[in-house]
Image (tube, rainbow, N blue to C red; front, side, top):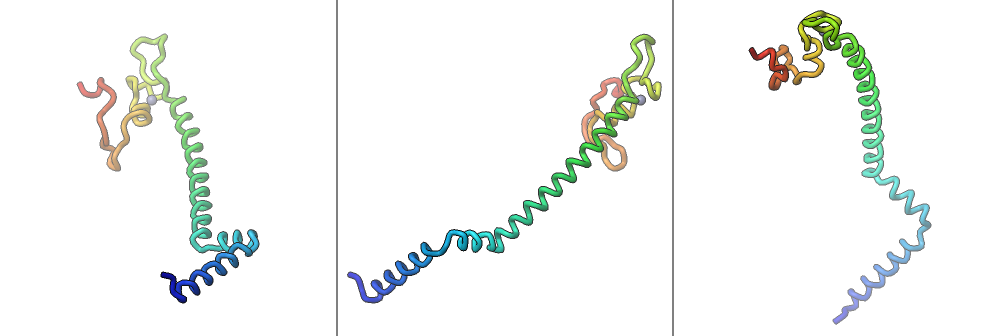
Length: 122
Ligand SMILES: [Zn+2]
């Protein structure tokens, strides 16, 4: 059974919905864009984009430096039996090459993972 209060509420809801529908789309869009949550989300995305761009630039610079060090510390010369690294002369792979391509090192230089070079285990 529908009470008078129910009818009043339904009429008020219908009027409210019609008011919403009559609002210009631009106004609704402006209201949505002005929501604090959305503004914060946009700022967060811009910050994340800036951080990602800075990290990418840093990564590129580090890759260039690593390539320079790798170019210096190449494998032994094939025309000289028993020769080591072309840069430091140490038996290949030299410590620099192992540092570049081996497991991550701890703060004190200790290995943080298994040693990849079997010649060092002997
Ligand atoms: Zn070397």
